[in-house]
Length: 98
Image 1 (cartoon, rainbow, N blue to C red):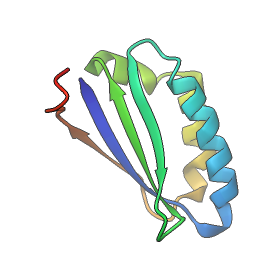
Image 2: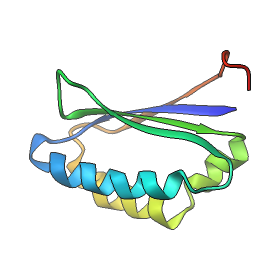
Image 3: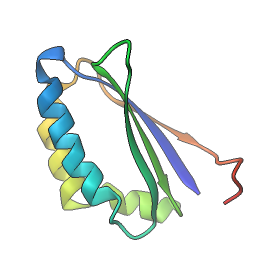
Image 4: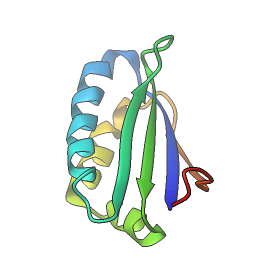
């Protein structure tokens, strides 16, 4: 399994727009071949702090995700709304065994 956790800080004035754009990316992502999970999380303490939990069945499927029209649209749309550069970190799945 290929897991990436993406930490995102959004400018507060763009929260509603970010959530809408991210919903569209989520909807496309969960339909991709090889997608296992694509969760969008928002901090209850800091509504401008989001985490994306992305799980694909292979590194190739994760790489294909970054070439899809819905991802490219999301990336370009939200770029100016970031309070800081987003950071994606790769993780290894331990349990459940996959």
